[in-house]
Image (cartoon, rainbow, N blue to C red; front, top):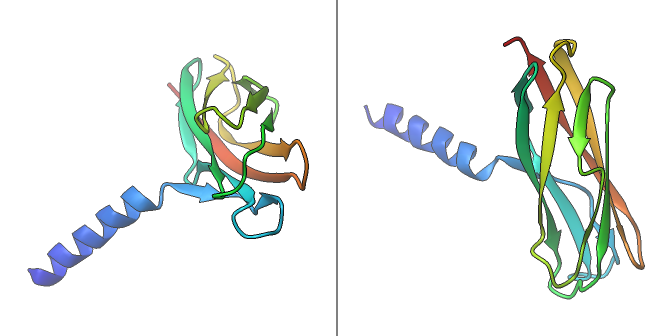
Length: 135
């Protein structure tokens, strides 16, 4: 019984804390002066003909105080809005993306790419998957 409870608690903690993945660091290579882009770790599931929101965010280093332009690109078959977004240094680091799957979208996995470019320094990018399923 103790083993079963331990396994359930471990899986619950993994689900809570393991829901996002991060990009490599962008900005400066110095500690605390860069940023990462956090996107969903698991595939986001959406039904044909539906719209769903997905949160992505900037993980700023302690000393990173720049605006970052995010560019979002996706495979043909799904639509993402917005495709360009500027997160100002003074803004909250979260962006809600609207993902729309057409009524006749092909079933399967679609890749979404997110690139973050700061005013100065290196850009970084990451990807996440969107899975279109039948209604």
